[in-house]
Image (tube, one colour):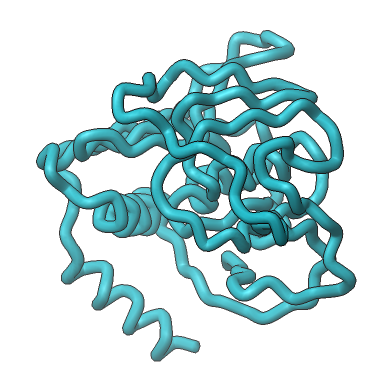
Length: 216
């Protein structure tokens, strides 16, 4: 395991970094509700607001549920939240931005990570037999105009991994993206057990996700 962590450290050291990055702990106000940005990448800028460390890791590594990440209890505690803003050149590819976010989190929180295979029950988000009904996001669709809350998700511009992450939160069970869809979509969920625009959303029986992770 020490060798694996050494390789991880060397890889992170050689990977590119943000030009400017800020990670700040949120000062709690005592409010019962709050608005959170669980991760956006736009023109080389990465932003998360009111996000737990687990939320940050899920966005950086493409996970959709807290059950895929293990570690100290505080990383999932919603009373311990962070605001992250990071900038790189506007033409920075999204995958590279996420790799830089992984490096930023590893450095700022002094993380040591490794992966384990574990059996988990989950809900699979997949395309039905009649094909995709979800529409691609319009080129001029606003990025920050989502209306998301318990029982509904309405967004003109959302990636499927983020949709799976939100569904995991609202349905209180792991939701794994198995659509294979890239890019951004127009997403509408009305709180029922299946997505109106993606025909299939079904429980998997004791299936093992392809990318479980743990954090020490």
